[in-house]
Image (cartoon, rainbow, N blue to C red; front, top):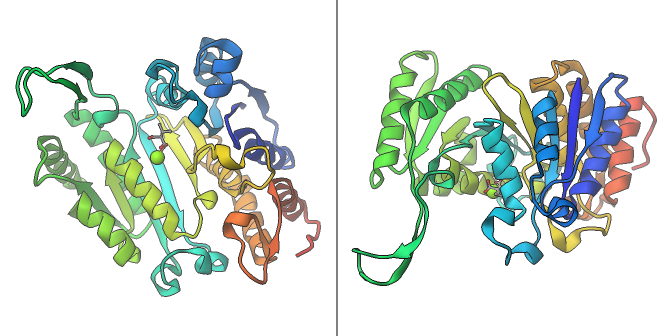
Length: 362
Ligand code: IPM
Ligand code: MG
């Protein structure tokens, strides 16, 4: 088993270090190889996704990814910006199915911005299509308008598009995931306005015929954004397009108390995957040793389960995270009165200790 380790920018290397530490104490034999990506790769090799990094990612059985991006690269031409690294990996590796669970740990109920009763026990799974939609649709660019409200003016445009097979395959992923959960899928669209999402809704409905045991409902994205803060526990699996999924998954993350807790998996058609925390590179706290490594550690657990066939090892990591939270250890993002504030490294050490059976102070 070979794992490509791509720490990236900002807090990326701090949090990935902790996840690597955890992987190393599991007594499994994998090879890990690290490469630069994002702004770090731009600095080192002049490109956010150098050929060698892409090749390593292609050759590996799974990829553990930190985060990319820093404001200091915002002025670069778009193809050279750090974000292109993750978009390029998704595209070149065909990672079309993005799993973003939003789980509210009992110990963190108070850290949510919503009332505890709304989020206690929350367990929803957002499945975001990741290689299509307006993110990748061509054509896109800038030009002089020939029509519209201001003919002759400069304008910019992107293209929202989805093909039937693209929608079908993500719908299958969602229905199959729901079968292992509470058997309910909410498909989020904007069918009242957009042709692309009327088609989305039609195709998801067609695929649903093969899953009569799973309940399907449809919701407009604006309403979904509202329902997520009004009654989030009504959702089980949410399936949606690339852009709506980007937005709703950040919203859902916040329900759980901290985006610093949420892992994610991006899978191709044969379950090879890239695993990354749902949060970004947080350049404002980079290098300070305060970032929460748990999302990355839990991403490593997802990797063991989905791509490396090591469900038992994954369960050990998940249990260890539960143990450190129960012991009262908290990084600043999830800290509250009466709990013990720890840094990135101490949190990683505590997870390692919980796995290896040592007691942790708390
Ligand atoms: C995410 C991020 C990315 C996205 C950025 C960094 C390109 O926001 O993974 O949600 O928009 O997909
Ligand atoms: Mg996002």
